[in-house]
View (cartoon, helix red, strand yellow):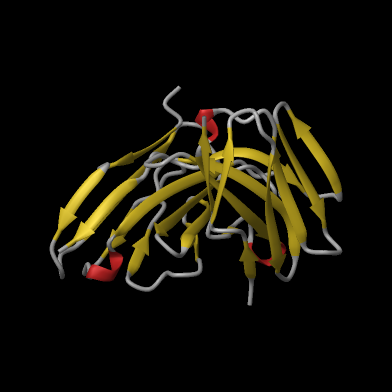
Length: 115
Length: 111
């Protein structure tokens, strides 16, 4: 049971480059989320998706793009990376009961450094 | 706006009891989660409260008072492995299932 995985686990890139972080879950959960975690800010929601082809912005979406063509995958793309996007990125997923109170399960994280 | 407050750091000794508080001012409250996060790892689920009162789960208990916008996580019989960050998160009715997190409380347990 692989659960939820992220790749790469570590990434170093340069300002202006495009970077895609991958997230894959094997539970067939409807909901998937992307968060970033920074010292002094805690976890902040970037984007989330309620189902394939349905995505919505979170608290800090600027500079990021997401897609969800398949239920199990939810890639996050930084179109032109900036140093302020250096962070640890967590993907999460949850089932849905329709009440929006299901537990979210987190992937292992991707540590991204933008030079 | 939404605001969730937790103490930044706490220290305790093995075998002791510690209470980590969380206060929130949010609209459309739909439940509160506690997560544990060890350094360099992903957050893992500890508890969920939507109704007032205490939920007990082994050495960990979580309490919620919706009228006061207050929750606490109680850890009993502390062990060294409990050294971690504890994240309080609120789920908002109007935000789908998205969680709003506090900045977390780093707990250090010493022998």
